[in-house]
Length: 480
Image (cartoon, rainbow, N blue to C red):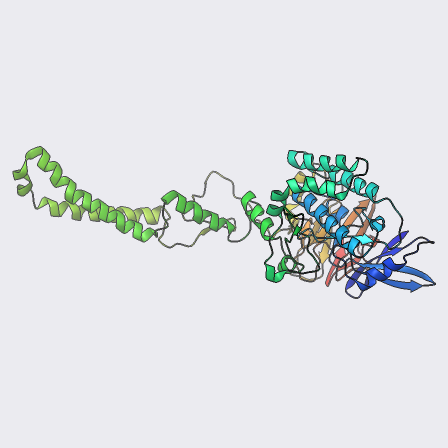
């Protein structure tokens, strides 16, 4: 079996050329005429009396690439197995053999947002499905964060279950069922009106064994970002601390917690004046009554008018001084420090050295080279000259490439440099170094990558040298 990739118009295809003697039979016709849930869309092309199977992988990434630089969590493991279970159930309805499924991580395609999976089924291909599934679970076990004990226990348990004789996917689903609460928390819910009948896989298994839907095809992908569950997780863990509005929202919440109320500053000052006047007007006569008796209260009745007026003037002056010199103003918008919004009550520590303003995610200034070199000592450093992509547009900044591999795209959590353009794919290109040679790989991008005026095929790798022109979608750069 030979596998390669091709770009046609705005679609990218994984092309499988089966071995001689492969007899697809009715399976090929069944896949051609039906959209089977969980399987990649499929069509056949013939050349020189040999057939090739084309699988549409547009806007998807192989599982191996997704997990190349990060761990897999419990929710994603459960979602992957749930979607596999759904696909197997649908394949049974169409009398398709599970032995034709490619379970290699490089051929399991995933949407970066939502972790929805598309499996590749090769018609008529012989193989041992249990062995392939066991190898996949062994791979996942190596991709978990070993500091997450619960995730380790789940992955190890699934792999051990797959080593048993005559195990089935149903046995694995029993273990996944115990993680139902975790899966529900990690998978965003989708309103019933947005349900896509072509994708029923979801966030858990109910008591009857049916799948619960957790997302539709277009909902989260159209939003261009992480799903609601992911956004809540990032907010709770502080990963969104640099996003506009989040700091100010947190500060306003902290302000309300400190004061115990959300009453405006001006109203609080007025209330304080009334409390002070009331205490003096009532407290002073009561105290004099207790000390000197009732007759003393009448002798000093003029004093009860002077004291509240004096207290009113003094507290008003004090409030003015506090507002002006204490840098507090009623209704004041949040101040800024180093480009970040701060609430009105936050003090700017004078002893801290001034920091440079944080740039947009992925932006890297040339003068920040020393900072990058310090980070690179942790293990990703490459000795020698820091390479860069020099843009043709004057308003754009150079893209520094201080380490390899270096991924460029617009998915903030999966790339090394965020190129936030609508024409750029979530994972667009990867730049590697092999000895003294540099290579660039198109990561199944939608609008493609050109090197020296030649459009690369999907997932194609090409060598690059200093001075080569590289086009990422519609953005031109020179490799320096």
